[in-house]
Length: 120
Image (cartoon, rainbow, N blue to C red):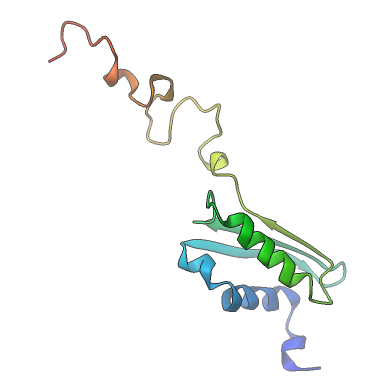
């Protein structure tokens, strides 16, 4: 048994992510190992930052899963990437994060198609 094998599974997965998946950080993303249970073999990783809403997040997720499932101590891997709509309140949110009414095409009250007589 080597010294690396003595490290907790969570630490080894975190080190692997940093060393083998630098693209996450290079594209403004973050990664966190939320769970790494050596008894059950379950590992849960969450990607965030620039990964949220990224078009290639599915590829990154698949690559992480494929590699970590080759580890003998890992039997189940879940990689979560939050839906960007969750952080903005979802599609039913009446206002955008900047407070502009989306029901008016992003123009809000200031961009009315009928500005009235006081409009300059």
